[in-house]
Length: 130
Image (cartoon, rainbow, N blue to C red):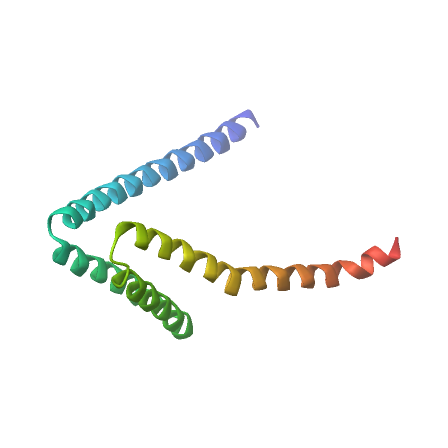
């Protein structure tokens, strides 16, 4: 019995080690990609924009749900249009913050409230029984 416990502990530990190793590889790759994009941004804005659009298109190609893809493309177009007209770093930051909060209030907050209402409806019968 002790042998089985050791085996499962060893297997669990090895899975965690493999998971951590994969995570470290992904993090290293992401940091390298970020450094490359940062370098392009500071040295060659046109190349940066081309690479940014390529990465975004690559992301959209992996989305199977056509309706979700359409919504995300519209959100990206809204983002790109806003940032194009920003004129300065500070304005881009302010616009990014505004887009985030607008999206939160128009989409996330209503969805959270709806979910909260559904949970209250589900739990209401059990509350009345007490």
